[in-house]
Amino acid sequence: MARQLSQNESKLFIEYALRMTKSRIRLVSIGSAFLVVFAISVGFVLLMVLGD
Image (tube, rainbow, N blue to C red; front, side, top):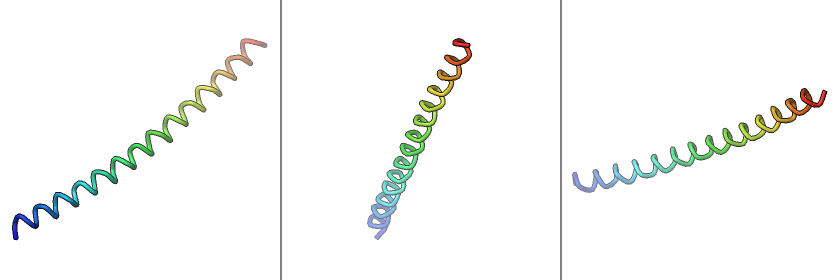
């Protein structure tokens, strides 16, 4: 019985870890997309200032 319980806990932990990893990957993807947009807009502003 104790072995079955530990296997269930192990499965639950693996499911939890996978869910957390997926959410972290999603967060990193959103953050990197935001940084790319920010870098492009900073580049445009720099070009406008230097072109003026």
